[in-house]
Length: 141
Ligand code: AMP
Image 1 (cartoon, protein in one colour):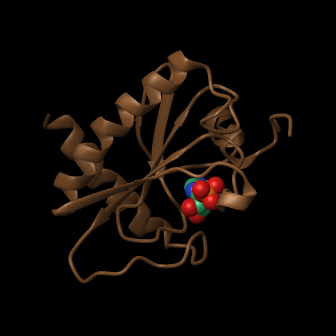
Image 2 (cartoon, protein in one colour; image 1 turned 90 degrees about the vertical axis):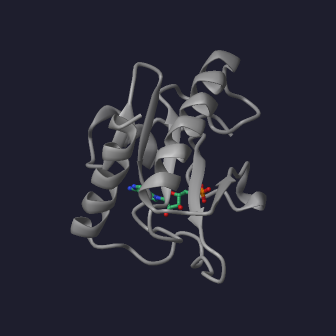
Image 3 (tube, helix red, strand yellow; image 1 turned 135 degrees about the horizontal axis):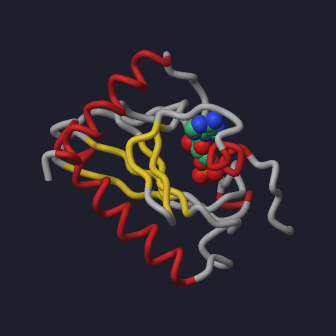
């Protein structure tokens, strides 16, 4: 399937639709998942048209995974999470629903289950408060 310029993350990169941003540089962007599976669920994407891990330019992949590591550390601190889950889906058969490469960062706590994938929209004020916590943790590093 060719990369679709109208996918929702391409629109977020262009600023055509709003997002709760926690970090960005020339090559990457990190923002809150609007249907979080746990509080603090964050996404990291390359600012480059790649559908998934298998077709991304290696330089952008390297930049994206390094930012994923950095943001994951901030998410861990901001949500006092003993565990961090990184998820990344390739193709609809694997459950991918947005066809622009992204890494999910999910803070995990013992005994706290995560919600179903892409199901319940979170309140904007909650997402902004969570983004602020992660930005503060990034700034303190
Ligand atoms: P995947 O199924 O791995 O492709 O994940 C796509 C993720 O994008 C899901 O977790 C959705 O909740 C999330 N999502 C969909 N639309 C938006 C949006 N406008 N802003 C932030 N996250 C979104």
